[in-house]
Image (cartoon, one colour):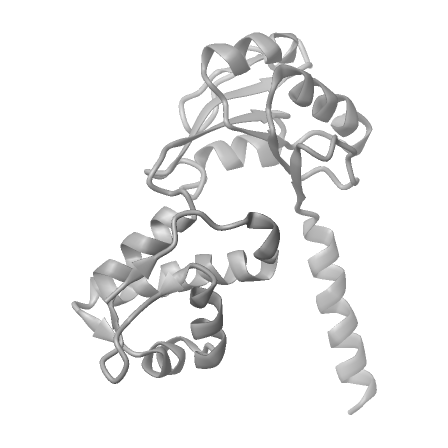
Length: 220
């Protein structure tokens, strides 16, 4: 039996917990694919190299899930995690920066699946305007950012510009009313406290892996 709390203070939920919910959702998707109807936290942890106590602790933030001695109903757990993460609604994305990364993200299935829809890609380079992307979108002029945000009801802004332009683009997004921003530029951008900004710097992860490789080689 599942008693899901639909009103949770987001300030009490850590980003790590939310990230793990995304992982749990992928695991549950896999269970549904192979026809498993019920799973315990121990079995879920064993199958996907997770921590059963952490699974129970994370889910407890949102209510009571599963039946003691039986486990979780897989389809019900899937439905609840989808609702918790807000994936039962379409999220409309606008990408600014039509370089290699921006155009690749247009075509990336995670950005163009059933929950997320890229509704435009913008650039300030006049030579790029009207260029087609692999996803079929045409590059549009970034001077129209505010207009496009309102017309296409954009939920999430995505910055894929060089570092020198990122802060200006972020400011434009905030001014246009976007309250959630995903920043791929290799610089931290500033935004009001009411705006959620997530930065993804792929080089940081590569440098972290390089550190571990270096230490491993030194300890041989």
